Figure 1 (cartoon, rainbow, N blue to C red):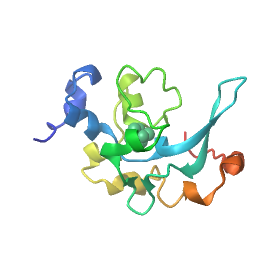
Figure 2 (tube, rainbow, N blue to C red; figure 1 turned 120 degrees about the vertical axis):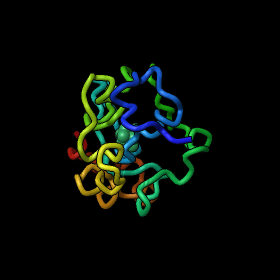
Figure 3 (spheres, rainbow, N blue to C red; figure 1 turned 60 degrees about the vertical axis):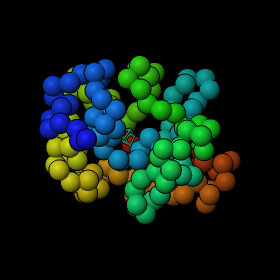
Length: 148
Ligand code: SF4
């Protein structure tokens, strides 16, 4: 079974099938970067430290179906959780559609090519570092500003 063409223009997030929902992810990997939260302001800061399961060579989770069991902090994004996930990148397809915006031209569903995410500069591949290479108490030094 495959997702129907341009389903994101005609189907609300709440009504999408599992296949359609999953197809919306552009694979940028930005949400798989570790984030730090200011305890006083709740402001979230992205680091360039990728989750232990993120494959920085392939640009994908190494264990997507088991990620929730394997990584304690990993959360399954649902339509109900989108408003709480204020830290989602501005380019995230789930965020864009929930805000009534269109998918960008570089989104794989629009371009027809997964590589367009990399070409448009939105993939973390080539920019992030693996979790095992940086001690957690040094993550503050890894805060980045290239996630919008
Ligand atoms: S930020 Fe959004 S589009 Fe990018 S990998 Fe995460 S869920 Fe997918």
